[in-house]
Image 1 (cartoon, rainbow, N blue to C red):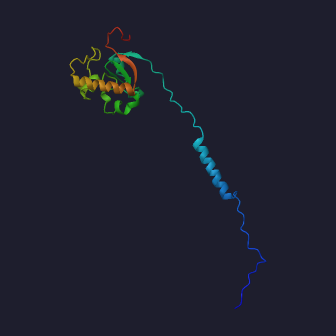
Image 2 (image 1 turned 90 degrees about the vertical axis):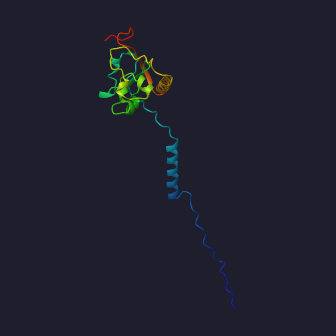
Length: 171
């Protein structure tokens, strides 16, 4: 049998040394650095919307009436003598909303009774404010719950007094 001799005089081909700096690796490294930069860069400070300052005022029912959200007016409503700016809830209290009857009005009786009807609103804007004396304990409890909810969500922008009250603004 003939033996095959291996040629040991020629060294085997050397594996090519791969550089870590290949074009593909450089592209991947660049993408990684960019993504890390996007994640860690400081964000610009938020820009607050410029709105006119709200001043605490005293309202009478006729002075409160125009604040019903129409003609780009803010939406205000009163609960137990406090006037709330509910403009941020315009979808609910503004024109077309489910509580639109309360916009620009004293909503106390309607909220206490759980009714959105016009009957719950004082018809005579020049007359005395609704004293709510005929409400039951359950209705007063419901009214307090609404008032707490408004105090948590909305700014108090004034108070509601009757026309002719010593605190009423002179028109």
